[in-house]
Structure formats: structure tokens, C-alpha cells
Image (cartoon, rainbow, N blue to C red; front, side, top):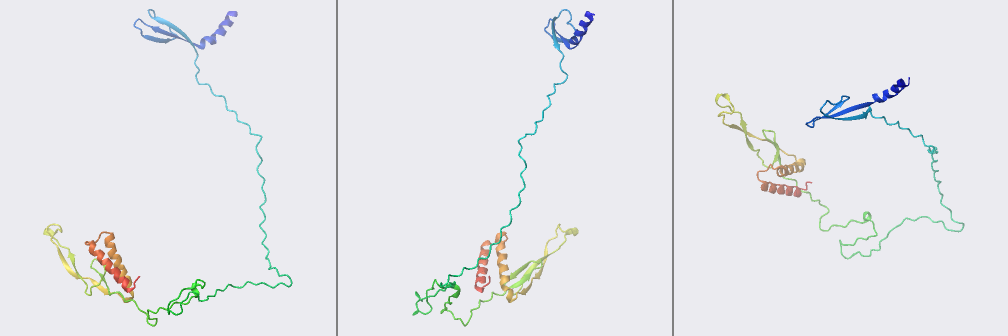
Length: 257
């Protein structure tokens, strides 16, 4: 009975252990055997190891912290303050008996003609005490007030349209002529094989610009000339600058803005 109890106690320990045999032959080759002794003629080294765990140990569960007891209560809702009361109208205080009643008097500015030169007609120094809206206009003795000088009207212009629907303004009385290319065919009816070139002389369609639209037409012509310089469409930039200066002079002399 005692022997059986000792065998039962040693069985789990033997099952939990692993015996490794390290075998080295004459050439120095190492062989590791699990539970099998080394063959004869080899150097044997025995090593007993415990049973390795099949899985890493699980960490202990985290403990949740209790709610703190020092939490502040939520703030109490406060009623909105009442709107301010409208201010009562303050009546002007009456003077004490026997005192005069004071009333506001508007400020008036009078000029004593100091600084004006009456002997020189048409000349005078403006009084700084008089508002500019109440000052009398100074008569201009150099110009005649009875006759108004009217600015001259701009020179006449022709509004023209070319055969390819190009709109422009011209000072020429006669509309210019242009060469409208014609479609030609070459040998065998092909357009690109010995076709040559031909054109038809056509005249642009022009009409005189009304007098009330001359200023606008001259302004458009000025913008067209300026666009030639901006977008590099001018064959002669120097001549285009001269033409722009001439058109600006025409607009200035005619009073067009």
C-alpha cells in the first residue's frame, strides 16, 4: 500500500519533466534527443527540464476605480436678470421765482469785412467765419457769362464691317476694299496639289456714326488701338503709340470723357 501511494505521488512529477540527451560523436557533431539515450561510442550529456507552459500567463484583470466622492454638484440654474426699466423723461427744471427764464439762442456768425479789398473789383479774401455754402460766388471777369462755350464735336467716323465679320471704325470717307480668298482645286480635283490661289475684291460695308454716338465710337477706337499693344497684335508698335496719342488728343479737345 505504501509503495502504491509513493508511485502515485511521483507520477505527476515524472510526467511533468522532460529528459534531453545531448550526444557528441567522435567528429564533434552534436545531436539532441528527447527521451532517448545516446548510442554507444558517443559522449552523452543528460538534462532534465520541467514542463514548459503552453500559453503565456494571462495578466490579472484590471480593477475599475470607484467613482470619486468629491464630485461637485451641477450648477443651479439662475433666472435671467430683468430688463432695465426705461429712463423717465426728465423735464427741464423751472427757475426759481424771480430768476429769468433762459432759452438756447442759435449761434450766428457775422463778418465785419476785415481782410476784404473793396477797391479792387473781382478780388477779395474769403472770411473763414462764413460757411462756404453761404458765400457769394466770385464773378469771373475774364469770361463772358452770357455766352457759354460749347466743346467741339469729335471728327466724323465710319462704322465698318469686313467680309469676315470684323467690326472697326474708320475716318476714311470711302470704304476700303479687301481681297476675299476663293476656294481653288488642283490637279485631279485635290485642293492641295497644284491648286494655286485666287481672291475676289470686295468692299467693306460702312455707315456714318450719329453725332450723339461719336464720343463712344472714339473711345472704342482708342481701346482697340490699346489692345494691339497689350496683346502684341501690332505690326508697328511705334506707329500704334503715335495713333493712341492722337486719339487721346481728339477726345480731350472734343470734351469726351
